[in-house]
Length: 167
Image 1 (cartoon, rainbow, N blue to C red):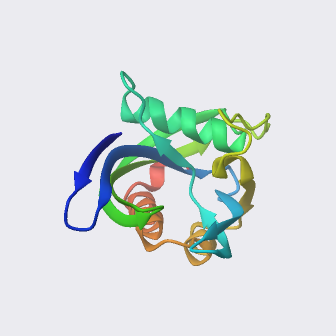
Image 2 (cartoon, rainbow, N blue to C red):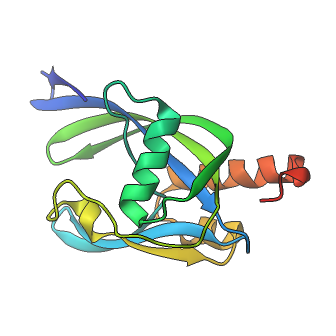
C-alpha cells in the first residue's frame, strides 16, 4: 500500500492492488461474504466477493487463492479464468483510496469448509459470514457494490463462451 499526502483536502491518498475470486461450486452456487459494518456512523449490511491485498512478492493469482481461503474457509480451489482488472476509488476514514482489483473465476474442487483465517480477530474482515448464493444471477443481485457485480457479469460471459469448462 502506498500513501501519499493530498494537499488539497488534507487527507492521504492510498493506492493498492487487490485480488479475489468469483467462486462457483459444482451446483452453480456462488461464494459470497456477508457482514455488518459501520460506514459514516451508520451500520450497513454488505455482501461482497472475497478479495484482499496483494502482498509483496505475491502474484495476483496467489493472492486471490490465499484471500478466498482466509476470508471464507474454502481452500480447495482451482482457477478457471482470469476475469481481468477494474479500477475503483472511494473515500474511507479520512483517506482517498485508489485500488486496482483483479478477479479470477474459480471452481470449488471440494466442498469442505475450514476455519476462516484473520490476522486480526477485530478487523472488519473477521466479521465476514460466508454463504452460497444459488446462482451467478442471484449473486449479482445480492452484491452491495457495482464494482464487484461487473466481475459476476464477466464470469457469466466467460462461462457462456466456454461451456466446455464445466463450471
